[in-house]
Length: 360
Image 1 (tube, rainbow, N blue to C red):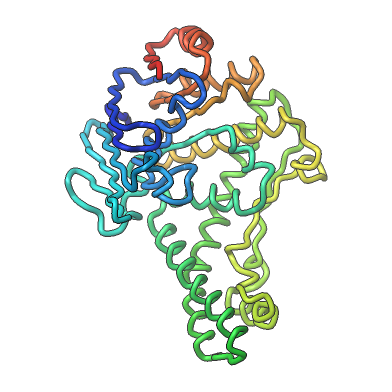
Image 2 (image 1 turned 180 degrees about the vertical axis):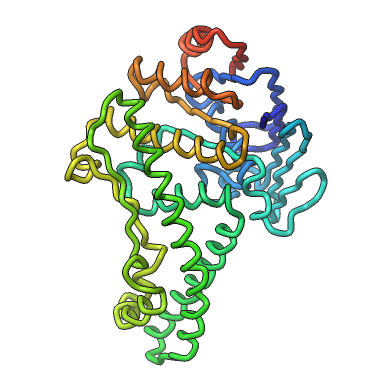
């Protein structure tokens, strides 16, 4: 079992200094827009994955007028106690500390406290571009396979160097093919590992998504998800060699595992072109529930589940199905938010389970 017992926030977004103690497995936060409900869930996510779910930079999470922040959380995992601290110093230096030990690499922390976040803007996972789905897949696999995350970091670092070199070629009018070949070779191993793991992982994950979709929608609607990668047809070496001229013109690496796609179809059409709002929401929750199920199966205990403003996004039937699964069938810790305290309280009490509601 994984539980967050307390969390303290200092200069984090709209919180100057605040501590929350959690006595129950099911916790609801209620309050008007701007009260800090989503920020509190984001702070929990920070402690689990060392970054914000929303902000692209750490500095964006500091309170207005400040350059740094501090979050401290006390977890219980399989009856063992852990204290996790995330600090952004005013000089921009970030620290992640577990039981008073500073990490030398933040990637070492990923997966220790698995978490699943469901937020209103997550619909982009279904309707947005391929980058959104790659990010989702990478975050999920990274929580269960540290080697995957290390290969991903390595690949992205070399990719950035290669793109910089291609831009330099265009600006100077001179090409260093030997240096380009060195960078190409550094991409081969991580690309192969990432592709292999994605291919293996998605084969079972896609099946799980389809099952969850049918559960939420209440019927079979011809949903299909297809993993597409250039490495299904060529090795990374062959791909980079064949695309060199195009890369030179574009001044960037135009093909590789950073362009992989998870295509979503409903019947013979792309889902985002024909799906109703209900179908899009059902698929979003199906993907999140599948993520949750995979993490629980591999870790041996349920991840922490963060549900932000889901009452506004689902009709009553879908909401009932989701809450029953999240709070009754699931035995892990759940944090929910809602703008309406009465609606939140009634929905939780209807589950006939102990719960805690915090007004913000």
